[in-house]
Image (tube, rainbow over all chains, first blue to last red):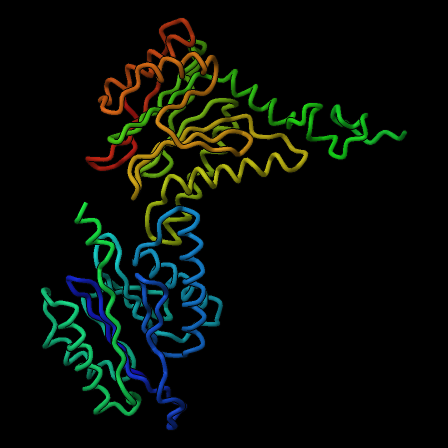
Length: 193
Length: 227
């Protein structure tokens, strides 16, 4: 169930989600938060088992903070995605997989990044991505509207449209849309120097 | 009183930690390790914003024996050298290599030099806590990471320093004097190599055989041994 989308822009990254949490054929919640902000430069969109995802994000959050304190600068988006993927992979190999599909979105010195991470422990870097039961529908919108020069503002509109389209036809998605844009503060600071 | 086994000087005075502390409150085992380092081959590290250079004196050996390697690649972007017991140095280098590869596994990125120095520091510190032999080796680590060119020295006590010029081993104070006097932040790799040679030569009073390794901020950012 669920529809989540992530779009890489030239100004950062944008995440979008619906708000429905399903319990089989029952709508368990209509106000679910599926976009979790790890800190000012990283957020994760959740599809799948909410409890598993929350746990992974909590660990990633703690680990990121710890590393930042220890080495003096924070993890890149790729490093964070790999950290989460390693947790997922060790879960899989211990026969206790985390039933999640995550979109890890963040900004670092190199700009914005979207990584798709799943329970197998694989991560792929994407320009845009979608996950959850509504993703085939959302992808239709993303495929036709994404372009490399997209801005955060345009991407927010595309993300909204993609999730809205999925909500129209996917019974697992609905009850409203949430969008988060992360501006590329780190890279712009770097350019100014 | 019953024999309780080889205590330090403080033991007779009723000290609580007979194995560790000497009469002046110093860690006698660590002091001994440092003393061993001070008898090791003279070794130098120099850093500028553009590059970091490691140089180590190769002690002359018998004609049929190959001299030991003294400059080590830790990971593509990091190198290290040391002074003290070569066996201990080798162990510490391996610990660094292991940590560098662990970081690549965990985060899919090269480790930063500060984390390596910190790890080696805590690894060595462990040997000062128990009644074991502290590692008789100081290590100088040079590398490039997200924050630029880095140079660290790590001592047997677990203490580590970040800086632009280090000297360890035999007569290292004399070598460091030479480096301090003639160091300049805009010198070239060739000039730094010449300076480290001069430092070692001054310290030993003879023309030395020196092994050198360099890592620079530009072109490739890889640590390489100079031929």
